[in-house]
Length: 99
Image (cartoon, rainbow, N blue to C red; front, top):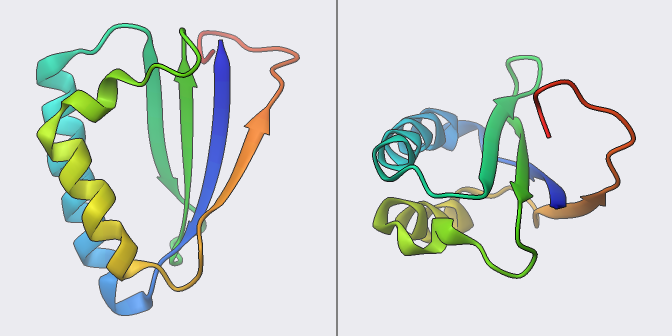
């Protein structure tokens, strides 16, 4: 399993936009229920920084890209970023029902 964490700093004025887009995207993901994916987005301390966790059962194969709302979100977020997204590979050393 591949686990990635992304830190995204969003321009303050776009925080409501990203939250609405995330709700739309996650509703679509819930409908499609892509196999082999664990995906979450969280906002840090009510600010404009978001942490995204993505775990893929099959590395190099992301079923989320088949969902139109996910692709639309990926395009929109580029205009909302205050700085480039910082990706990190995670090595899970322990987890309870998360990974």
